[in-house]
Length: 327
Image: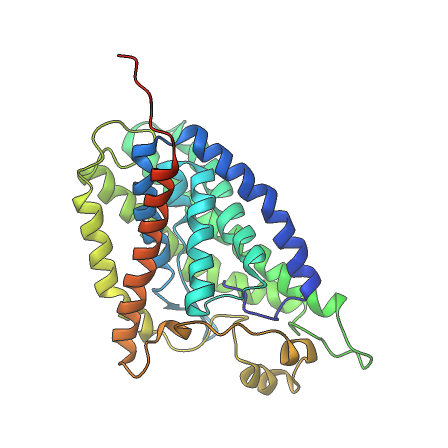
């Protein structure tokens, strides 16, 4: 679901980049108002669940791959605006450091996965959990919300891909960017996400949420208690880091994330805008580290990504004003 560089036109990217600016501003304002300073570092751990879940590639129907996002999970724990920031930062780290998703397409990827996904997922979660009491209602709401939220994001990505050949062609009528129209992009994207990827999102979301509720009851904005006992959550992050090379077992590319040569073989030509567009040289492309074995590079990349997220949210906590008590 990570839209790569040059699959969307610069104007499409610009519209979505601009659209995200007020959303990010609103998210920062809302998080400052609603998240206590002592809870901010925990959002970094929650963001790590998002980052790591996206490294577990799973095979989808049609020979492509997909992944979970865990945006609804963060929204349940810390609110949808916190999820917006957490997933956005995870996506930006992936794009800048690992080349996973385009730099120009950051606005599009964040709009889909960091804004629409957690907002839709959280709204459905609240609607269900408010009607079904107890832990059962929470977990059912989390499962249904995460499933629909992920598929809402996938549908938007499919539309963004599919409108490109309608709007941007050369003199001969050949597509300049993504060459597949809506009649292809929507069924292709939704088949995998309505089936396997959606179930993976449910599994990650419900599984991690149930684990945290059982082991770290204070892990979340709506819970009280000390925040220092996050060892089980940190242990789960470490376990996911160790297991993330399993994501390498899924062969093939995600739909819409092919290299130029592979795309040219599929459609019979190289879309000009995609062939001549701007490229970012990621520091560790495709989660590799020099000549190290691929699985080692994957683990090192996971450690770096998680460390960056934890540091960023720790710095954000340090920048917030301490809560003043008059007791």
